[in-house]
Length: 111
Image (cartoon, rainbow, N blue to C red; front, side):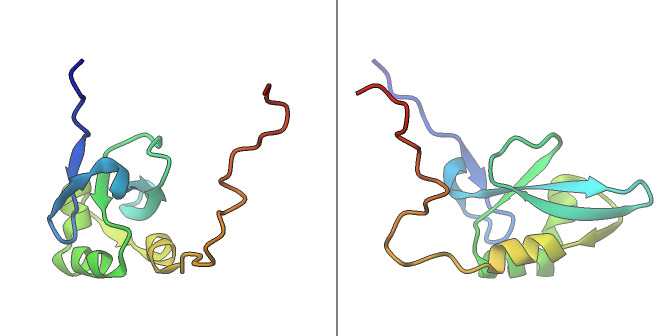
């Protein structure tokens, strides 16, 4: 049986290719007046055109400096990076314990 290739995307910040599962998808929501807000789409399910970026503050800073979000998302107008900046800068838990909100429940499963 042939192995399927993993989909690859390019980070808008560092411009390096990586598997889509390693990158954060970003979508823009507009208010109709030319103002857009960038939102992270960790589940990769929100509608619309998406841009991909490593979830790293350095890649985020590079993308903002290069104005890459407007080009990648094909939007012209004022772009608010606030929500995305909070998401990227949020510290990740390093306790060594699995995140209980992400662990599948074993209650009610047949053994």
